[in-house]
Length: 453
Image (tube, rainbow, N blue to C red; front, side, top):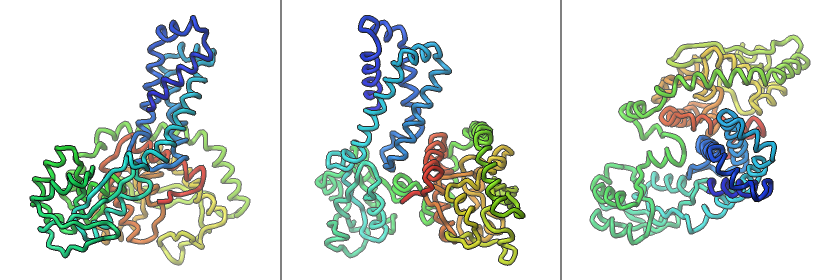
């Protein structure tokens, strides 16, 4: 669809801005320029996650991704085909082509996300094996309104091997008792696209594995509970994993290959950010001095970094001076009374974290990664939360997958939930995922709003 929009926009640009006798000549003589333009836009949209099906619909993210794709494409063109770019800017062909593409593409994407992906045409009919609490939780995840395309659980299947009493209806969805031998016929009769294993005791489904494998090879997707959480929730539940799984996840992670590129990217972005945000930082420092002339502007604190190495983090001070003299290290609350009025504004738009770009330049932090915690809190969480030390295998970040998916936490339970998102990030780490996190963070920086789900 995007490629068709690009071609349509280019045709409009040529028809409006070029004389009839020049159109064919312009296309053939500058074919490589057109191909680079198309490749740049498509690659940028791919890297920004614009082509993912399980994509969280957001008009803000749609606009930000659109701006990124056009900026990336023009930069790509300027580095590879400067003469072609200059020619088409002067004649206005490129400007009109991109404008036409943008209007058509944004309209169609809104139509796809708001209408088609929520319609019966693209409906993903699903059955869940099981009738317990896990099956109900998985149904809730699958039928969330932001899952694209829409999913509908048409039945819960209770296997004879599960040894559970079979209710007739569960949460307004029919429950069907079925043997392993009849499973294939029942599933085909329901006309489903997806089978989810949702048994509380997943080993009870082992007798059905031969049938499920055959159905998957026949074109019906089969997912385990862990796969559902990863694909649709972007997290890895702690209760479903063990050390063997984490070892396998570390083998699948792209970090060893990605590490050097990520370090170069971090330093490049930090240098640009320090130069562009310097006026903002000076204004913040001035405002802090006017509001509290005798208090320091910066706040330093020891944090735990990659492989457990401690470092000093730099932030703009958001709490009153000496806030932890009496209490020591404690969890920060959502409406913490220790935070100043100016500090509340800085935290809402994450402006207090601007000095942390110094930590990135020093190689102590990354742009994207798990949130660095204080040594005292880290020690407590390692004792109480299983696998908490896993997050120390990557560089901590200014923003991260856990920060945008589970933005606020002030307890051990919250830390455990955020760890599940951190584990997902470590396993699926890539430039594309980092870019999606950065674009999502812009929503907080620009609007001062966290995610709503």
